[in-house]
Image 1 (cartoon, rainbow, N blue to C red):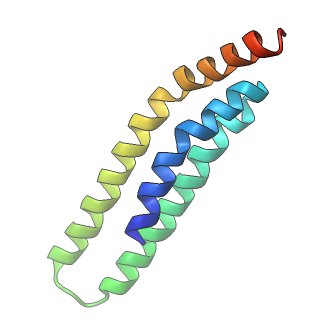
Image 2: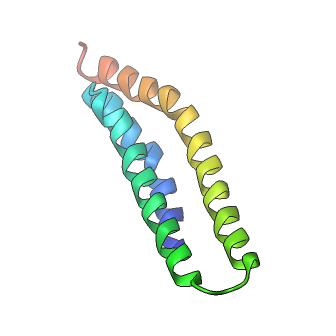
Length: 96
């Protein structure tokens, strides 16, 4: 469950580079939305597994969610830059 999140985060820049090369703005937002949906679903599952455990377990679940959301926000803040690099690659290679 936690290993998938790292793979999702590491694939985001490549997807944004391809989105810039394809000149598609919808592909710029789609990966971040998909990762956000996955994080929300995983958070609900963790809370469901906690059940009757002490409050410390809920605190851990919140900590994991906040940490992943901050990491996603940082990657998303870099997305326009990576998108523009992909767009410049398109201009250089294709010419339009």
